[in-house]
Image 1 (cartoon, helix red, strand yellow):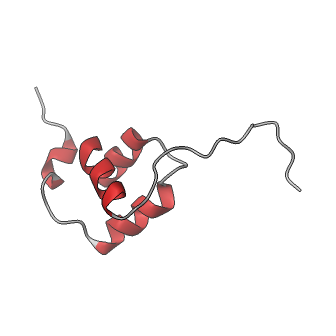
Image 2: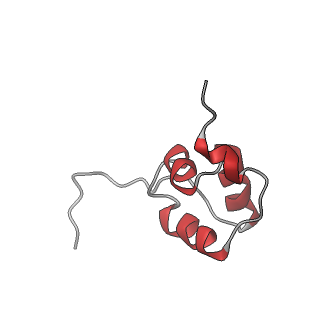
Amino acid sequence: MAKPKYIAKSGRPWAPAEVRQLKSMGGRVPTRVIGLKLQRPVAGVQAKAQEIGMSLKPVNKSPRSKLK
C-alpha cells in the first residue's frame, strides 16, 4: 500500500509560502483539502492554524444571500 504524499512534509518546519497559502485558504476550503494541497497531515494543518491564531471554520453564508 502506498503512503500518502503528505507524509513527506510531516514534522518539517512550515515555509512562509505554506503559511500564506494556509491563511488564504482558511475558512473557505475544507481542512482535509488544505492538507492535501500543502501535502501536510490534517492534524498539522489544524495545529499550525491554532498556532497563528487562525480559525479554519467556514464562514456561514447562505448561497442565496444577495450581495450588496
